[in-house]
Image 1 (cartoon, rainbow, N blue to C red):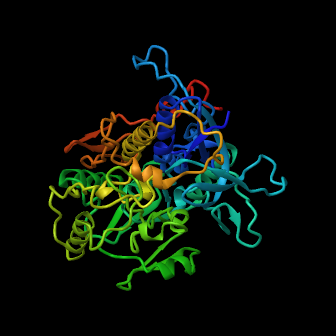
Image 2: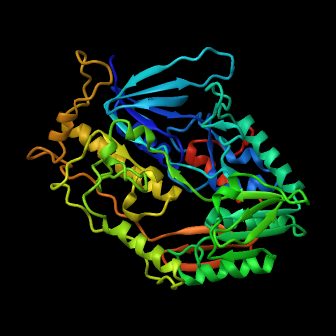
Length: 489
């Protein structure tokens, strides 16, 4: 049987969820292929904690062996997941190039001496879920002297995305933090706040400084949440500097004082020193592969991919989308010290899909790589977007009448004009309207040391002191289809 194919690129929170819905929503005549450069899911939300606190490393890396269906924990009260009806395959590989109907990848083998090989895979639909580049203090692929897992001199893959590598990287990072007498954390987003508070809580005698370029932390959230964060940092003894931007030249061109501490300066000329500097800024969308064939969909400044509400890739609209304008206005207010309004929820009115066609109707983009209409960059957002994208692919396939294989077509090729024709559905077709994505209210949970954490959910703000050292990392394992009773897997 000649399969037709849906490729899902990236197997984090969004990619895995999309693959699960597709695997349960398509027939055996379809194949769902999930590709990721890691052989275990990386639970990124616990990385700052694991980098600081030893003893829980293995919980952050979750096996992909059952990833096409959530794991049902007996006695949990959760319903049984739907059965897998499509053919499925997980591929551990680096993605090399992408077009509107095919992807080229380089398989990652356990033996680094295995000769390099490239594989081309055609697809009918693709879900692009490659997220964003995580700042180096929490990025297991950011080994010094290497870029995107490749040695800068030879271009050969030297990082293989394995659980063993990740644990080793954690342990080396833990040693660096333990040995440093002083730490400067640059950037007071959620990651920077977690790093600063965890380091000071685990090592109270260290001098920990947190510097942020804006006058306020976490500006899109309620003032009550920001107040809790600053109060907790002060209680821990973290020095917080707001409204000063680091001169990145001094961060990358490393200089030391006579005490062996690194020296960095702000744009205002202020000099700061610390034995260890953690740059928790500069998260960049991984959209370079999309840009190779859909450059007109990549925002020239933010580098996110423009999408329709259906999450199909689209040209960047002319003019500045309202949600981007609102963000830029908010940032300008922060720069001059104006208090952000609590009602600053960034949203855009739904676009009329009849006025703007998808650039490639078979290409869907979710998670941190897409503009998301002002949605925050978070796993739960990617999860929601994955459901919309995967359901829309299923709708399009049903409209196309494509549940039967087409033996005389090239495997995996996609007729995008046909996909365009079924975008609005023929008269009398069921499910004629595709689902549309609309962001929810900003929601977040931030640890403020080993026990204390704060949260905002549906505009409700709270603070608790019953946190766990491992941040209850095993609770996410069933989401990725893994049994949390075997954390060494």
